[in-house]
Image (spheres, rainbow, N blue to C red):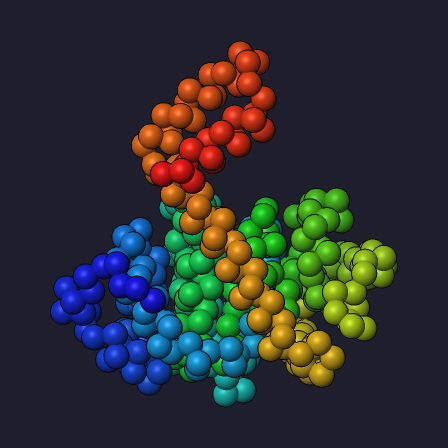
Length: 338
Ligand SMILES: Nc1nc2c(ncn2[C@@H]2O[C@H](COP(=O)(O)OP(=O)(O)O)[C@@H](O)[C@H]2O)c(=O)[nH]1
Ligand SMILES: [Mg+2]
């Protein structure tokens, strides 16, 4: 790739790309964190720099189980990841948790709360927990998270958990970077079937009704039954895989074993019947296309002259003089001429 930035200053500050990539491969956590931070930076030279490191280690990526976990706030995602993650660490796995929270810039983030709810996991040497900051766009979040995911894989993490707040569009984006999509729901939150967006339910390979303990237990089991009949109507995403529904208690550590065995079963099936690597190639293709669109968008809107032109056309559109489609055509034509 042609080098548009002077990287020598960055190499002086952070180390050479060669060294950094070696450290990533050796599992050095400080370097991993630093490279993720650089890829999240709004500075293009930082992004370019971290991409250069990532490109060097790219052949060592793609070997983890990528698990997406989603669900409305308060459903118990962080608690579940603590329990499930600790269970996996005890099995000898290395876990990276990437939390995507597009709302975190407004709320100040749930990061502090998460750290305390993932206390055991965050203290483990075999776990790496990293919240993704809110990008200005979902596209930003998705690129950060994808790059962080690949960097973690290169660092030797064999299980990557990507957590999203199940409130919107971010699920579809995240489902395009993971292998298995797990949806958490819980009783008592008023999230009956209609409360959770249908689209999210359709993405789920596994639905977990959490908080199946104490007084909530029978309600949790009822909800699981409801979902079980509802998902039968959904088309299986991959060959012969029907969305499964189970109950668990993240707090009391119940049902975790079964969830792991379903996950393993899923990966086995996936690998045999749909070929995991083909799936990942497809994801890379989509990523490329997404990036092209976002890059173009960014370039158009950051061009002063084109922005002036947009303002002019906007006025014309608003008084009904020009059709939006015709205006867009002219604006893009002008942009391409430059
Ligand atoms: N009874 C019960 N409460 C739970 C369970 N899992 C989480 N919680 C509680 O639900 C609340 C929200 O949990 P949290 O993990 O922060 O949810 P998140 O917003 O989805 O990450 C906390 O008060 C947890 O203690 C569970 O399995 N059973
Ligand atoms: Mg949380």
